[in-house]
Length: 85
Image (cartoon, rainbow, N blue to C red; front, side, top):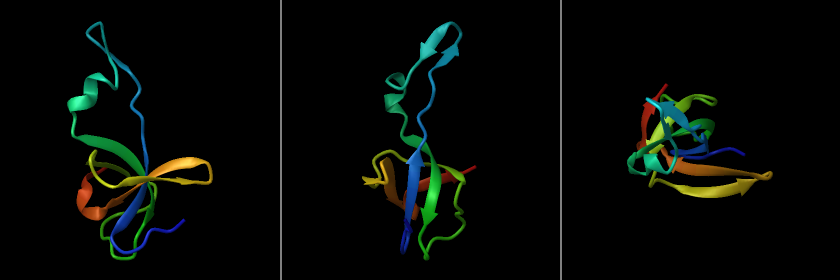
């Protein structure tokens, strides 16, 4: 699977519940967080500064999901990425 143009194929990373001060922080509590974490699977030929396997943060309202080889991926545009680790 290869992204084209300014598209990026990502694999969203589910955050594990965290224990903070005796409170269990779950995904449902994080619903107000605007940016999600993901791993880059493929980058299009017009993207800049992105590489496969890098971890990014992206706007949770961006893109759409796609099923490929039994896995669910998201396809977003480079402009929806706000941070690269």
